[in-house]
Length: 120
Image (cartoon, rainbow, N blue to C red):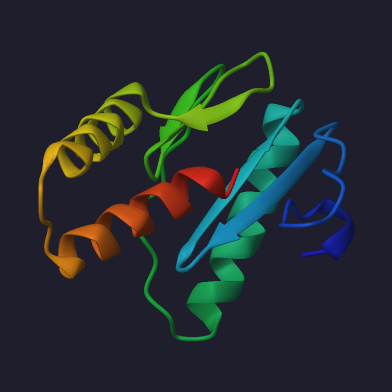
């Protein structure tokens, strides 16, 4: 896949016309304005991964809006954490702040969730 189409940290977002993609650990997400181009590039990427002998997840095709890895990608071009994820993190922060003492593991886990939300 050409880097010019990759959405990644600390770089300007490429045009989504006709397509772009991003990778998070073992997941690739293809999106754009041209459905056939997006599907073609996604299939090309999946074939390359399978040719390397790596297993792939089930494929999910969406048009308009989609939920992926705890994110909502909406047709207006916005990417945001799913409402349920944001709500759980908010409640968790409130709980931690209300406790006189907390376990370091709980703070570490909560910090990981906050970091994930902050990635976009």
